[in-house]
Amino acid sequence: MATIVLQRSFRASLGTAGARFSKLSYSRRWASTKSIFKSYLVAPQELANVLQDQKTASASSRVIPLCAAWFLPNDEHKRTGHKVFEERRVPDARFFDIDDIKDHDSSYPHMLPTAEGFAESMSKLGLKRDDHLVVYDSYEQGIFSAPRVAFTLRVFGHSRVHILNNFKVWVDQGYPTEGGKPTQELWEKSTYPVPSINPDRVACFRDVKSIAQEFSTAGSEKTQIIDARSPGRFSGSAPEPRPTISSGHIPGSFNVPLPDILDPNTKTFLPKNELRELFKSKGLEPTKHIISSCGTGVMAAALDVALEEAEFGAEDNRRVYDGSWTEYAQRVKPEEGLIVKQS
Image (cartoon, rainbow, N blue to C red; front, top):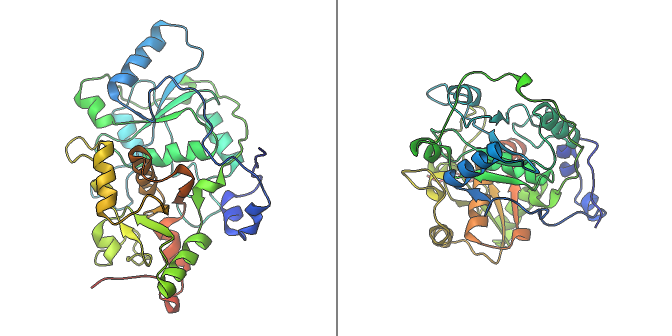
């Protein structure tokens, strides 16, 4: 099956008429490449064993930890991903900066980068197409932005990607860490090929607005939108982290706050059965299409992982809204009545 390679901004492509994609063919599933890990989520002990084996044996491909730590712009402790990465990380980890590896031509944060920009960033990190990448979050958050980075890697066809579940448990169980500011000289720059892209896993503003309008007029529920933001931001009673953006939610959407899918103590993903029951309790149906959203498309990817782990709905029926609420709230017009606030 043919694939497409985006030579322009991915955001611009998604923003054009839907017919643009109907004329193109692309893979509808994540590429299936044999992995040395048992599943998409990797336990700390499994990663530790693989990294130890890598030191003592000649491996055909590398396993590289990838820190994806990120904090909201209004973080009360003024933490940043760079700071926590330098304070404590998995040994030999590299830092994937979602504030830098994005579409710089977009006015919305964290939009997917162009294929060329993605390849350039991967090359600077010294990463190769056949590397096994294990993405992880900060100790403080457990699971937060790592799923977004893993999602990005998958969208751009890097199938050998996994998520550590999680760095908090890694530290608490006594696995090794290191600190300090690494230098790029620790690894050689690679030549990562410009990848093809899988746009069918990404929802754009046009898609979401159409669903919101249909729900507002006819109550259609063919596609369910789930939102990982806090209940206050979702209801409109609490402000957004970005003061110029209204809070509230998309008509017909369901609130599934990020903490609901995580263990309150370890901050790991809940077990499969508990995730399934959670989604059912929210009124979701696995037979319908599901779009995951949040503030800027970061936490939305964690919801998508939870759906995958719970086997809740078919993979082809799940998408992540790239721009999420930050884009939606700025692009809908007040007179359209497409922002819901609850009293």
